[in-house]
Amino acid sequence: MEESPPSSSSNGRFDVVTDTINQLKVAEEGDDGSRVQVTCFSEVVNDATLYFQIIRLQNQIYAWIGCNSTKLGDLYAAAPTRPGNTVSVSTLTGGSSDNTGAGIARRLVLKTGINVVLASNIPKNSPMLEAAAEKKLVQKLISLGYRKPGPRGASP
Image 1 (cartoon, rainbow, N blue to C red):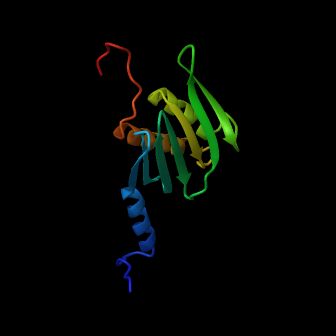
Image 2 (tube, rainbow, N blue to C red):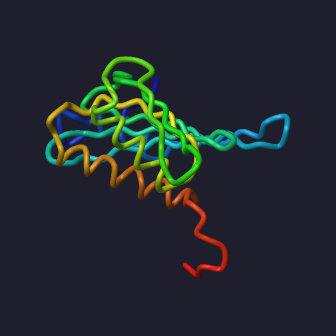
Image 3 (tube, helix red, strand yellow):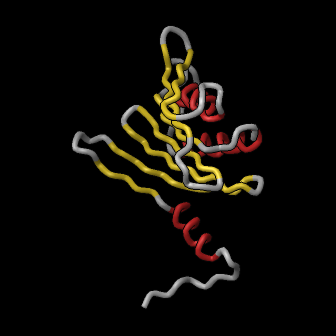
């Protein structure tokens, strides 16, 4: 018989799941030598639980941000465009290009320089929650090695 870990609160099982999500990191080697890396974590911000999943694909990122639920939310695709340093964003499901997820996707492309597909169910009209979610996601992406390369000859 399997025992569940002791809990000092009514959210004991939730804490175990959250700890598991925080520690999950899966990496698989593809046939062509490319790596697919999946990273999941969560953060509690302003009494809201934010869930994150990042899937690293070749030359692009898929990221999901869930707020107090595991619903997919609106889906956006963003990519750098030429000439110049602009970003194109498209709404794939739900929402419109002026929603929370579209802005985050656009800024992620500017910071990483690669294509981004972002799913987000952050509530509208929650700028503090949006900023906190984006900050946590960017911090994690930087820790995973995502940075836009600087101009040649520039020192960090």
